[in-house]
Length: 358
Image 1 (cartoon, rainbow, N blue to C red):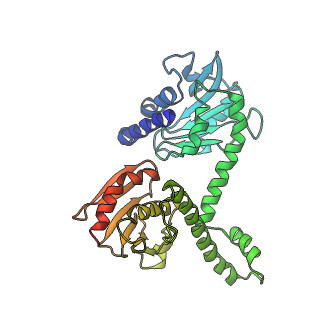
Image 2: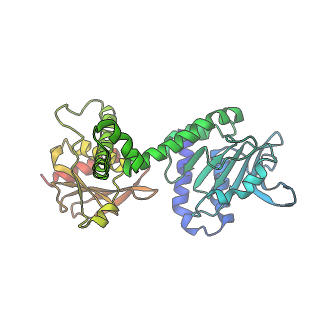
Image 3: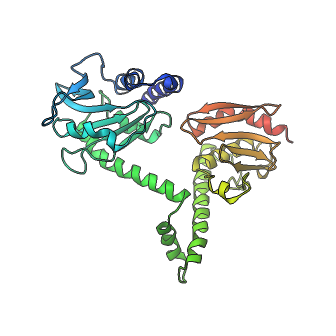
C-alpha cells in the first residue's frame, strides 16, 4: 500500500503538470527523477547510486550517453532511457538501450516517457535485451496486479535473480491478457472457429461463421458479466438477494446507423461499473428499471431507459477514469476515480438521484 500511495502521488503530479511539459529534459526532472527517487528508492543525488548521462562506449560509437544508470556497489544494475511525456514508446526508441545492454552488467532496462514505464530483460537470448517488456506500468492507469512486481525493483528489495525468475511469467501473462482482452471484445476468425468447431456439428460455412461471430461476442459478454456479478456478490457480503439478478443488462446504444454502432465498444470495466451502480441503487429503486446506453463518448446509466432520467455517466474512454454525477437540475459534475471500487464513494449521491425518479 505504501508503494501504491507513492505511485498515486506521481499520478496526481502528471495530471496537474503534464500539459506544461514540452521537452525530454523537463520530463526527466518533473517525473522520471521522482519515480527513481520516491518510488524505486534510489538516491538521485548520489552519482555512485544514480548516474545521469551515463557514458558507455560501444564499438566505434564513442561518448554516447544513456539517460540514467542505477548502480549497486559500483556495478550497473539498471539502465534507463527517457522520452518526452506524451511521446509514444516503441522498440525503435530503445536503440541505445539495445546497444548498451550487452556491454554492461545490467540485466534490467527501462524505457519511459515519464507516464509509461516499460521494463526489459534478456529472457530470449543471454545479454541481448528482449524486444518485448516483461513489465509495464502506466501511471495514469495503474494495474494493481503489477505493483508487487514493481516492488522487487526497489532499492530495499532489489534481487536481480528473483526479478529475472519472475520476468518470464510476467511477460507471457501480460501478453496473454492483452490477447484475451482483444478477443473477448473483437474476436478474430480463428477464435470464432475454435468455439464453433466444438459446439456446431455441421459444416462451418461462411454464414455459420458470421452467425458464430455474434454468438461468440454475446457469450464473451455474458461470461464477463457473470465474473463481475460474482465479484460484486462477494464484495457486498451476500447482501444481494437470490431472486434479484445483477446480470440483467439491457444494452441500448444511441447510434442510428451501423457505422456509428460499430465504433462503440462496451468494455469489461464499463459493465462492471454498471453492475456496481445497479447494486448501489437497488435499495432505492427496482433493479430492472436500471439500464445502460453506451455511446462513443461516454457510458450512460439511466432509469427506465429515459435520457431525462440519468443516474450517472462513466467516462472510461481515457487513461484517467471519471464518473459523472448529476444534481437536481441534471447538471453533470465529473469526479476522477482511480479504481472501480471508488464508485462506492458516491453511493449516497447515486441513491439521491434515483429517488427523484420514483
